[in-house]
Length: 123
Image: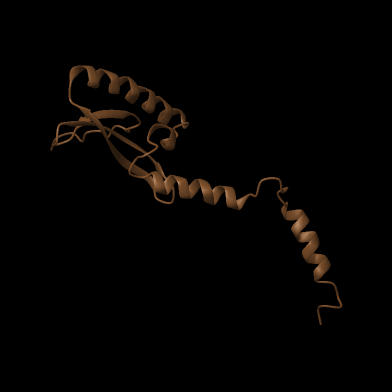
């Protein structure tokens, strides 16, 4: 029996060529509501040495951001294939905590609930 290969944790970004000859980014990152997702974002650039060098620099920056947890999909791919999901997640996050309103703590909610449950309301 052959020794089992260790799976390397893929925490970077690579450049790949599509069947049509275009360059694309391949990486794994969090997709809102799904979890870890495998992305493939195709560019309009043909597979030439100059374009490959340019995209390899971008891929190294994307990989560094993914490893440090600061990757912003919308910054890198504003017209990407999963833009809608990221925008919907950002809007939902804004709706959960309205700006300008203080966040209520559990103790405050509990105190209000106790006040509402006074003896005249409870048999």
